[in-house]
Amino acid sequence: MDGNLTDKLQITRTGEVECWTLNDPATRNALTDEVVAALRQACERVAADNTVRFVVLQGSGGAFCAGGSLGGFAASIGQALPAGQADPLIAMNAGFGALLTALCALPQMLLVAVDGPAMGGGLGLVCCADFVLATPTAVFAAPEVTLGVVPAQIAAFVHRRLGDRAARRLLLSGEKLAADQALALGLVDEVAADLQAAVTQRIRVLRRAAPGAVAHTKALLYMLNRPVAHDLSVQAAIKFVANLRSPEAAEGLAAFAGKRKPGWAA
Image 1 (tube, rainbow, N blue to C red):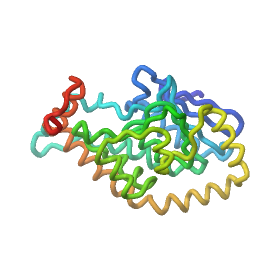
Image 2 (image 1 turned 30 degrees about the vertical axis):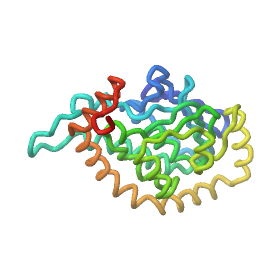
Image 3 (image 1 turned 90 degrees about the horizontal axis):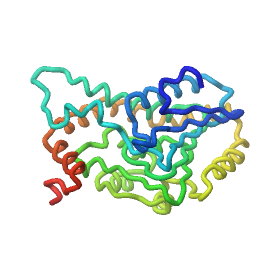
Image 4 (image 1 turned 120 degrees about the horizontal axis):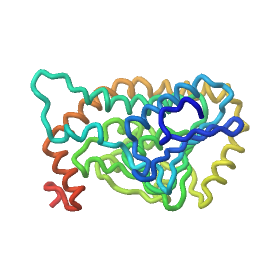
């Protein structure tokens, strides 16, 4: 569609259904700053378009989303901020939280279709959905703590989707969930080998719901969570950046790159 910020987010429309496809297979559809900005723009546009009833978010190339890209943060990993200087990275990280909030606030039904990995920030996107459909090869995880990084912006949204116990299980361990485990946990609503057919069938069933009533119902549900998510966004960014600048994050990411265990796990 015209006016999109990047070719790494492809937007197509069929009738009342708009499909947003993360399209950067080389990075397994990582969430770069430009992709986050494009998704926020898409949310703003479609929220004002009452001719769209359904939004489908998916990935290309056999992956949903590998998570956030640290490209904009790379030079700051393990580097302390000079005393008295405001940290520019806080706003960058909080911007992703703003995207998650915007996805949750959409008046349309949001379906997330997951094939392959949904990691870190990708898991956060999943947790914004009204309905999650996945292939049997889908994998879900929040591996941040195993890398010495804080799953800052996604924490509130994982907690909202799964509740305290399951959120702790994922966020504090970095455990990977297969599709059937995610289904049992309530993260996924349906597992299907033919993902597109499952999405089409789910939309066919959901058409029974009146779009205006859906929009108002979603607004009420959003009100239950908005104060918490809004208040946490900046605090989450502060904690993310503080940890990113620590030696722990430097060690964790160096260990990952070197395919070895970090010092705390050795």
